Length: 127
Image (cartoon, rainbow, N blue to C red; front, side, top):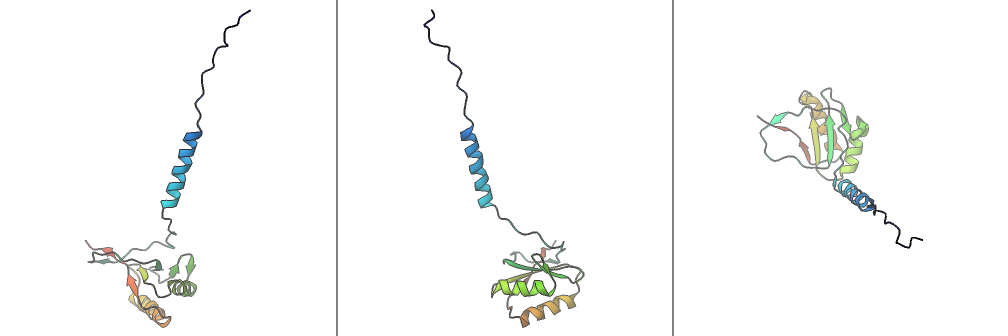
């Protein structure tokens, strides 16, 4: 009769702490990431000699064809929604370099009629 203790099995390392660290990192990156909506269409900005970048949360886009967009809306609906959301805050205007000045002037007049007082044209840094 063998009364010696049974052989010990090697202890298996738990992966639970590693899973916890991975989930904590995932939560950290999700909380610190700034998720911005995609631009409705590609806009080539006009060049200007300006050093300080334009800042604001509400951006209207104008394509080279004169199409106006805000978030996922187009046309008059986009302008109305942008004005409703801005409520006196600064509004940014990202106009394509190929858009006619008449389209920009028409949009600025429409924004002024709706009560928007502060519109900043976003430009690319000049070479």
